[in-house]
Structure formats: structure tokens, C-alpha cells
Amino acid sequence: MKFDKLPQTCLVDETLAIRALDIPAGAQITLKLWSSFSDVVLLSEASFIADADGVVDLSSHAPVSGSYQGVDAMGLFWSRAPVHSDAAKGYEGKSKDPFTATLTAEADGVLISHAIRRTYVGPSVASRDVNVNGLVGRMFEPVRQGPHRAVLVLGGSGGGLAWSQEMAALLASHGYAAFALAYFNAEGLPPTLDRIPLEYFGTALEWMSAQPGVAVKHLGVVGASRGGELALLLGATYPSIRAVVAYVPSGISWAAYPPSGHGAWTLNGKDVPHADSSTYDSWRRSSAGIKAGKFDGYLVPLEDAAYAAMASIPVERINGPVLMISGLDDKLWPSTELTEFAVRRFREKAFLHRVEHLKYANAGHSIGWPNGPTTMLKSKHPVSGEDMDMGGTPEGTAHARRDSWPRMLAFLQQALSDC
Image (cartoon, rainbow, N blue to C red; front, side, top):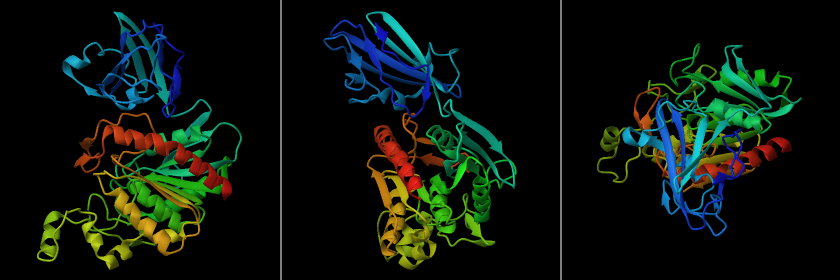
């Protein structure tokens, strides 16, 4: 028994051809994939029946049992989940590199393994820290001579460079100059998402435009969650942005997080008009005897059309096409409904550019690049400490990642080529 040729290193978004060969026809074989993350073992497994040629091919064979169902070439990757105690025995003391995943196959007492180091930064990408003009971030660029189409990349309410530096590294690996920018919760920046000046991002765009590897007229922005809200807001504020990609965003501007009585964003020293989410008690008091229905702290206050219009991002000012991606079962905030505020405004204002909203059933909040584990749905917020439920199912979110990723890359390529 052996694996068909597999790489030792690859990008995390690469789909692998996992095939086990030279197995007795009709024999059962068990494949496992494990990796370590912060002293936790992440493990998936699936059992297959070898075909008449003695082959198990994950791109065409469904497991008879295991951590995922149906044909899925990368099912072992997204279905990895934390294991403890007895289930983790045998993996302690092995590779602690979180980027290394070890694939094993066992049949009739024979065991084979192959380690794959999966990276965000391709071999033809250079990166550098940026601490100039008050900016805090990391720039990723292809080493080949530019100028390159460029993107400003923005994470969400966790702050720092969480999400943004991984996304920027992958985009650079696909040919873009990508600047992952922190805007709070990093050294020299505010500790929370509270009254962040949009001028800070204007400075970032100016700095990017001054870099020799950046094609000044081919500049986009990519953001997620509150960073997706921000991406739409920046596109509406700075005409140099020629394309916007917003993951699980909102077409409404919201207040600071954690709440402070102020907005998350300012412009010219004033709070950007924003909405405040509602607590159940305040909603019950204000709506008693008026309306009964499902409570949603984000959507309830927006039932007032005038209030929603006040807080709505003027997306019609964006100077190029827009792609928005959301999960219909997002439990962190109702990203599909909040995105539809932007969709309706684009339509009402007769927006001249392409607008697309990809929305996925059974997907939650954590949509991004494919092949990462989607099983860890609940956690603590890194800034507020509040309980978070990302929503969706592991299968649904994995599908949303896998389907949206190539569509997002194609969108950026076309949008930033046409401008």
C-alpha cells in the first residue's frame, strides 16, 4: 500500500489529489489526518472500501463511515476536530507545527503516513512589517517585478492582524500586492473598535499607492465581518478603491465594540452615522403591545426604515464592482440580512457597477479560504470575552468556503483588470 504522489508543501487553499494505491480489492482502509494547534490535537478520519483496482480516491469515493459524508476531496481537512484524552493518545510529542498535517492510512495491519506542510505564503512571496505614518500592518508582495494589482485587507472585531494577514498572504500568493492592516488591538493603536478614524485608512491607501510594486489604478479592499462593513464604508469614502470584497458584512454602520456610547468609525472628527444593536429587555420595553416576533438585536432596531436609512452605508458611491459573501445561518450577526440592506440600496440608487451577493445555506460566520477546520463553532471573543457562536454546520461552512473562494479570486482578477 502507498499514497499516490503528494506534495510536502503546498498552499492551504490547494485541493490535493489524495489516493491510496495497491490495496487488496474490497478491503477496508482507514485514513486519518491530524495536526496540532495550541497543544490541542485536531483529528479526522474516514473509512473506505478499495475499488476493483485496489484504489481509494477521495475525489471520487465516499467514505463508508467517518468524520464526513459524501464525496469530498478535502473532507479530511475541514472535518478535523479537537480530540482529548484517549482519542489523542499516540499523537502527543509529535509535530507541534500547526501548519503541518499528517495523513495516515491503515489496512490489514499495514500503516503508511505522509506529512504535508500547508502554508499561506507561497515561495514567490516576500513580506515585511509596516510601522510608518502611524500604520501597523504587514505587506505581502510577489517577488517578481511589478507593479501588481493591490488589495487592502481588513480583519474584524478581533483586531490586530487576525484573519487579515492570512488572507493577505494567500492573495499575494495569487499575484496581488496585499497589505494586511491592523486598526485596533495592536501596539500603538486603540485597544478596542471605538471611534477609529477613516482617515487612518486613507493614509494606508496613500502609502500603498506610493509603493513601487503597487499598480495605483488597480486597488481594491477585502474585509470580513466588521472589516466587511468597513470595506463597504471605505469604498464609499475613497474613490481610489476600484473593487470591494466583503465577507459576512453589513450594509449598515454599527456602534463601537464593546459598546462605549460612540460609533465604531469617525470621519472629520465626527462619528459616522450608525445604528446600535438592541438588548432583549430594551426591545421588549419599546415594543410592548406593538409587535411580537423573533428577537434579533441587530435587526429589530432596523425595522424603523428612517433609522435604517440614517445608518445605511452610502454604497452607491463605490467606484467599482462589489462582491459580498454571507452565511444564511450566521449566528454571530445576521450577515445575509445585513448585506441585503446594501443590495437594496445598490438597486434603489441605480448603481452602475456589478454587484453580487453570494449567500450560502447552512453556512455560518467563518467563511474565508477553504480547507481549514470548520468544526469549532463556539469560542470566546478575543477582545470582549463574550461567548461566540459562529453558526452554520461544518459541512455547510466548508462548502461555502470551497465554492466562494475561486469565485472571489475570479472576481478580483476581473474587477482590478477592468479598472
